[in-house]
Every structure is written in C-alpha cells, then in structure tokens.
Length: 132
Image 1 (cartoon, one colour):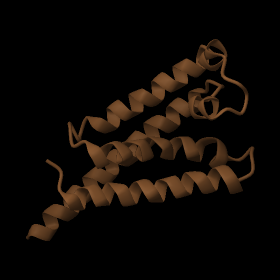
Image 2 (tube, rainbow, N blue to C red; image 1 turned 135 degrees about the horizontal axis):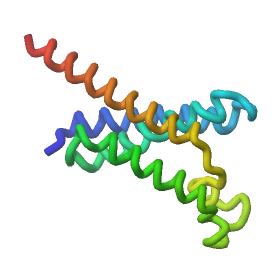
Image 3 (spheres, helix red, strand yellow; image 1 turned 120 degrees about the horizontal axis):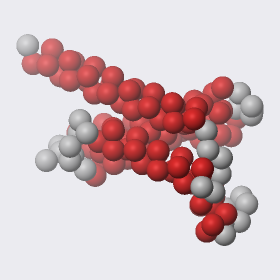
C-alpha cells in the first residue's frame, strides 16, 4: 500500500512535468530539439507519475509498461489510426494520439523510461542513506 506522502510525491512530480510539457508546447517554437524530442522524453515520466498516484503495483516494472504504452501509440501513428477513426484535424484526441510515426520518438520514450529508472535508483539510495 502506498503512503499519503508517496502519493503527494508523485502528484507534485506530475504537476511539475505537466507544467514543463505545457510550456514546451506553448512557448518553444517548432522545429527545435526541445519541442520535437524533449516533450516526448518527458511524457513517459509524466504518465508514470500519474499512474503512481493511484497504483503501487509492480513499481519496478511500471516504467517499462508505461514505455510500452508509448510504443503502442507510436505504432498506432504508423498505421494512421486517427484517419481510420475519422478524427478531425485539431481535435483533442488527434493531438493526444499523434499523427506521425518517428523512430526518434521511440528512442525518446526509451530515454524517458531510463530517466524514471534513474530517479527510482537515486530516490532509493537517498531513502536508504536517511535511515543510517
């Protein structure tokens, strides 16, 4: 069972990551590395933090599972799922799903997953060192 402070931790990180994602989307011009890849790198940790607010199931496997969800969305983009579903250009669902497949996005999702594992490792080391 997850403690209240753990839920707050993931809620705060979700908020921070969402604000960063929002600022990238609104203020960073395209094309730029930050706009095209930085947001993709941070979306996996954002989703992970949102999931961890509610679930404490398989915490070491969860980053991989969230990354796989990113892969599913990217594969859906490859098969033009938005066109199949008849989603209008500019619709919220079309923006969330995305419309263009990119191997770089896959790489960014993997990088995001590795960021999560790095954060877990650092947090565990800090928690262990605090107990001494």
